[in-house]
Amino acid sequence: MMFRQLQDMALFALVAECGSFTAAAKRAGLPKSSVSQRISQLEQALGLRLLNRTTRQLNLTFAGERYLVHCQEMLQASERAGQAIERLRENPSGRLRITSPAGIGATLLARFNAAFQLAYPDVTLEVLVSDQIRDLVQEGFDIALRTGQPQDSSLIGRRIGYCERLLVASPEYLAHHAPLCDPGQLSEHRCIAHHAWSEWGLKRGNDYYRWLLPPTHITDNLVYARECTINHAGITLLPRFLTEEAINTGILKQVLPEWEVEGNELWLVYPGRKLNTPALASFIEFAMHSEVFKSFYI
Image (cartoon, rainbow, N blue to C red):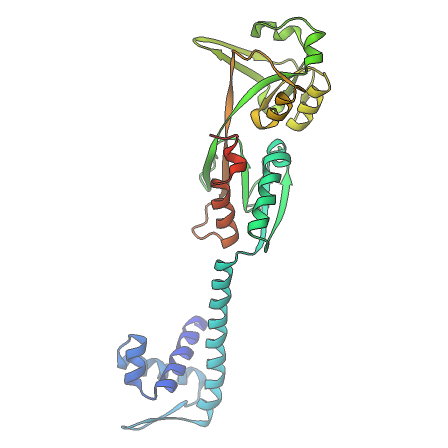
């Protein structure tokens, strides 16, 4: 009922501006009879006459003059609201809540967000870095980075790319332990496993090897696993973006380089809304073309 009355208030203001039902009906794209009927219904709802009608002209009553002021204020507020949305489209702002796995969040996402805020300084970011899978809708997150395609049909997924993973160890660790030439020898070494990757699968041509790691050293944080490995604690499996610099500087060394380890995909995941906020739309578009991610995800 209120929504219909707001429409009729706008129609009344149009009639007052045009000075006739005919001109107002033409501006509104409605039959003249419909405009007249709706103004009459508005007057009935208010219990007061707003217009004095003659065959030649319309005149506002005293009540109509007072009511018109409020109708015009309503239309001006609507116009200001539209202008505010347009400014928001042109210059995205507001808060984005983001969740990301720890390894990506502490490295690639941190670099990406620094670049994103340079481009969109009015967008504020709230970032949760955790390997725990969060419920985006229930916990109020706008977007998540996930290492795998979303299984929830209520979520939208955009694939960023595929990143290889490498077995690595420090040169000092390798120098003080038995030579490692075959995956079957992994059982003779100390290995650091991630909860999500407790089984390592390796491939060389048509040869496959799968090894379920013993629970001697397990973590839920890849950055922790990397730091342990740098400090000679054993062998671990890491995505390339966590190993490249350490390998290039000689801090870490690739183990069993002739064996390929299955990598993983990175996805942007967000609730399936038909209309995203300008800030979220800008974040998604920026991420899909970011060199930060393209450097490691193909």
